[in-house]
Every structure is written in structure tokens, then in C-alpha cells.
Length: 183
Image 1 (cartoon, rainbow, N blue to C red):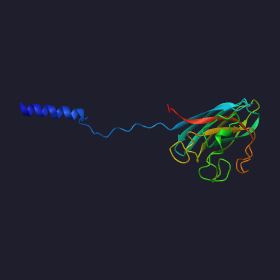
Image 2 (cartoon, helix red, strand yellow):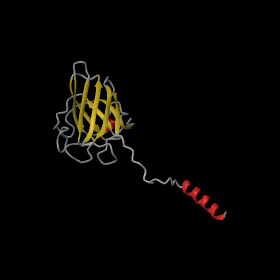
Image 3 (cartoon, rainbow, N blue to C red):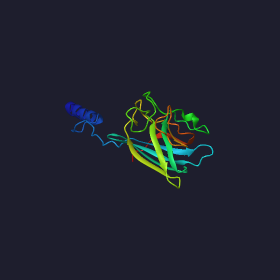
Image 4 (tube, one colour):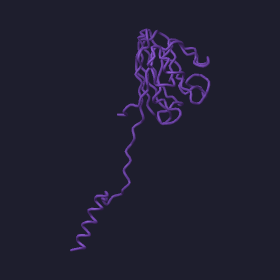
């Protein structure tokens, strides 16, 4: 009877510890890609709004933007250093996000601000869409992560060369970048 009681106690302990006769290595769930979103709000005296969605891919981060209320033509489009759009002119967002201390350039340049995403082009109705894969920004916890920073749309085109910010004029919209559900 004592050995029976000891066996029952041993089985109860094994089951309490999770023994099922199978490997204790948990099965790896396929992880969804990291995603982030910025909802753009107009600055004072602007009607510009939209969304920017960032999705991690194998070779970079896909950037998809849909923006309305712009004047026709090109508009500077950047990630700025602070996730703060509280100032009426979005100056609270700070300068371009540049953790690598590189000069300002276009999105395809080997050396550029991490936040340099070039221009968005608005059509005659003021709508702009953009979709490309960026190879500098990150959504992970590293120095190039744009999470917690802001996206800023400017009044004029970025010339992709003037220092420090491409001479793209006033800020017409700003949105803080936050992590999104990957569903």
C-alpha cells in the first residue's frame, strides 16, 4: 500500500509539473511580422491627414502611406526624432531621425538620415499614395527603430540634398508611430 501511495504521489507530481510523455520543448508558433502605424493629423492651418503603415519584411520595412489634403506636387516625407506632435506647427517632433549621424539624402542613398523617406507626390485632388521597402529603418528594439517617433509631411518637396533637412518647408501633418497588431 505504501508503494502504491508513493506511485500515485509521483504521478500526481509529474502531471503537476507538466509531464505528458511528450517533448517539453514548446512548439514554435509562426510569428507575425512586426507592424507599426502613424495616423497623420493636420498642423495649424492645414487640412492634411492620412495614415502610414510600416510592416517588417525579410529585406527591410515596407512603408505604405495614404495622405489627403495636400497641394498637388511633391512633399517632403520623413521620420522625425520625437513622438510628439503637440506643437501647432509640429516642431515638437524635433529634427529628422538620424541615429547614425549621416548627412541628409534621398531614401535610396547608402548614407542618409534613417528618417529620410524622400517625397510623396500628390495628384490634382491632393491625394498621395506611396509604397516602397525601406532598408534603413527598423521596427525592432535597436538604434534604427522608428517606434515611438513621428512621421512628418512637409509643405514643399524635399530636394534630397540640402542640409540638414532637404529644404522641404513647413510641417503640414504629423503622426506618432506606434506598434500595431499584426493580425
